[in-house]
Image 1: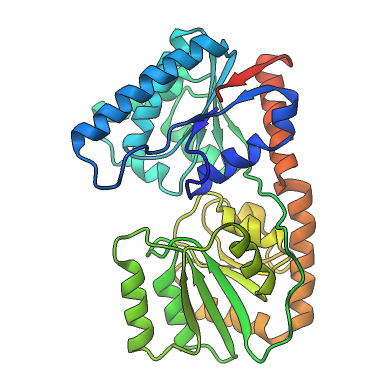
Image 2: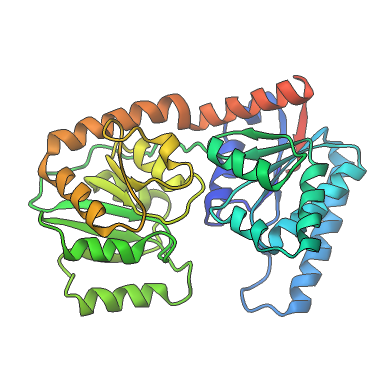
Length: 360
């Protein structure tokens, strides 16, 4: 199984790390191969190319050494997809079955923006995989329409239960947490607009770094200009135990994204028994039953977002009810065990039960 491994930050690394500790590792000969960056952010083009040539050599050697029957490649949009495509072709050359697992909120936009030649190459690579995995039914349809001929199946992400729970104490201000990179795509400008028109005393702790360069500073400047100090707190990236503590102390979760795949942060909030307010984009409408185990609002609509957050701020009982319903759904559909069992089912149905998977 290839992809960026923890401590790398991001959805792919979180999924791979969780699978590496799941029942998948006990029921298959699972080996993990790290494709994350091995050089600094300021590396030269030649350093980057050299690192990739080294990676390809290590990959070829690992395929021969471990004699994998199934190679599971986690990928996303951009140049990474084509680099992962080289791993895919090398695996096929060795006679391996290949699963291509697509992540990312902009993969459809990535394909739509390719030139005809590059789109043909992208389709060729996907077609060489035995199975392409999408994160939701919505994303399955998007991939099927853009990658004709590919066999696309659905596997939802899963997250582990947090190690810390039930530390919430009554407070005059309802504490929402925003967990994700600060950027326009995650709806940060809309959330700031919602703060300005809120009628209830709630605040948001922003936990995340930049996805768009300089966006944290832009957000901080907006908080200053709009006098939102009482409603907004910028924490920077929060990971590990600190993230569990942040979720345990929060009253609710908000993610007003304009585009998404299946965000790990949403599932982590459900696992922490938090009521969630999210937008109806990507896989989120498939995860949330509006008003039952979460609240859905239209994207890019500050008035609807602010009103939904106001309503949750008005009732601790309502927050607890929605949070508990979300937790029940998490246990049944979005736990690590549920994800691992779903992947085992895909392997079984596609390739048979006795499998040897990937690299470590």
